[in-house]
Image (cartoon, rainbow, N blue to C red; front, side, top):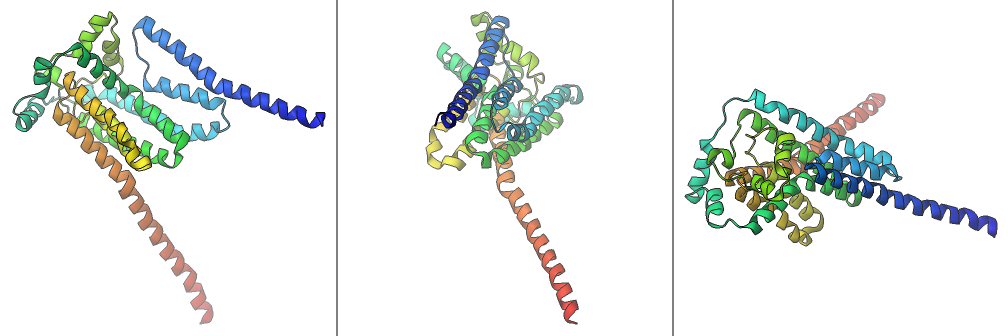
Length: 311
């Protein structure tokens, strides 16, 4: 009896130790990263968050599947950052008047200027900064949740991100659009928050993460939380209603902070919706049609030899 119980206790202790590593190592990494960011006034990019998940996978039995499934996601981030940094040197004409005219036609005024002039408050400043900052972590965290609990939807979600992001990237290249803080001299609230905090937090983000100042349309800030909401509704239906706080909070914040016009937000929603429909309906339809065509060819190949033998 003792010989049989020793291995079981050993296996149990190893599993407990593995679970401690799964949670402990990424937690220590995040703690060190937070201390570093607070000390030097920088913010971690999405690639560092992905690295944290890779550390989690290193002590998990599904590590190989994690590396295989997440390689396209990491390639998306790295490829986007590389091309995004080259766009300012390639594009020339920056469109300033078009988004202003679009907002004027819809509202009779520029909503960014109205919000900042009549509704500006410290509460809205910090609330807007909170929702705006979710853009840098939320898409990666949601991807991990899907991979962990809803793996069937993870691949389609990452593909939708690829389609929507690179479609926006092409638009940035051929139709660069100036944001409100440049086009109508709106207050860049995030930079004023840096002055209040005494740390160049958001200025560091825009200097190192967002090197293209004329990539306002379409708004990726509005696209990403909208895609998260679409997939949340696809998976859990009406239980996902609270998730709508994310896109609405981000949409309001981007306009209020002077980073995007309303037309930019609408563009992000349209791009995201079209990417979602393309991945969820068009691609499966094409695959289904192709598979049906292959089955017909296979049937012909099977029937021809049979007829030949009969002859």
